[in-house]
Every structure is written in C-alpha cells, then in structure tokens.
Length: 213
Image 1: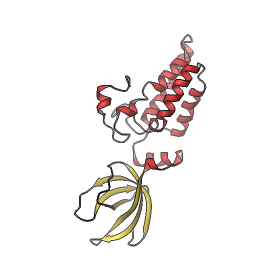
Image 2: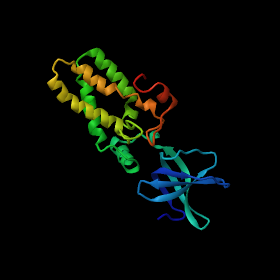
Image 3: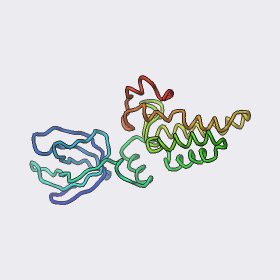
C-alpha cells in the first residue's frame, strides 16, 4: 500500500471524480499495478472519466488516510510509448480485441504495400496513415459488433483474411478494389464515435455516418 512522504509514479485510469471545497479534489483511480488509489488534483485542473493518465504523485496524510497528491499528470496520448507498452496498458484497463494489435497492423500494411494499382495504392495509403493512430484504438460499434478497444482494426483484419478465400473463388474480381475497399470501408468510424472508450455517437456520426464520411 501507499505510504506518507513517498513518491509514486504510474499510469492509471480515472474511475470516479468527486467535488471538494479544499484546494484539491479527490479522484479515484485504478493503477497499472491493479491498485485502487485516491489522487488529489489541484482545483481548476481537468480530467475525464475512463481515461488513462500518467501521474507523478506524493503520498500525504489526509484526514487520517493516505492520499496521493498529484505533482504532475499527462494523458496517455501525450506519451511516445512503444506499441507493446501501449497495448499492454489498453488490454489491462479496457475490454480489448482478442488479438495482437502489432501483428494485425503489420498484416494490414503488407496488404497496402502490395496493392498494384498506383492510384488505389496512393489513396489508400494516404487515408490509412492519416487515421492510423486512432484506427487501432476505436471499436467497430458501440455494442454487439466488435464493441471494444481495437475492434475496428480487428474487424477490418478479419475481413481481409476472408477476402483471400473470396478472391480465390471469384477470380474475375479486382483484388486491389476489394482489399482497398475493406481497409477504407469503416475507417471513418473514428469520426462517428466521441472516443474509443465507452463510445457514444457524435452528432456528425448520427447525421452523416461513417459511410458518407
């Protein structure tokens, strides 16, 4: 457990935010070490529920209990982490697609690299890499259909695997169009949802939808 006067640095997900009349307000977090802690954040600062942050803290005694006074905090997105570390955090804190994200990313990018039609390849490459970071975080839906972290990429990768068998049967189909269509068909879902955790639909998502976008 935590001790008074000791510094603690960790990634954690915000579980609950409470109001306070003190100079700091209490935030309940779940740390990457699977510990529940109360961190105290300065009034005027802002955090969001269900988001992951990196906290630098100091153990303090507050009303005869150990709280962690926040010295500094940053969003996970502000860190240049390795893919392996980021995926480890995502799988710990959230319901995650049952895949290795790095492996499916390599598979998808191999498909793009091997597209033969230069116009299709250029279009697909530009759109994919513009949206790549979010593409591997967002779900494919808010419920039922791959509704978890990396669900969108998992769904896309699954369809690419199915397409190989499909193209073997229907040899007259244009493989570049099939593969590019699969990669791009849902990619604007990252604009349809308000976030990748506990997503709900944006106004743009409701009125326009990912297909038109």
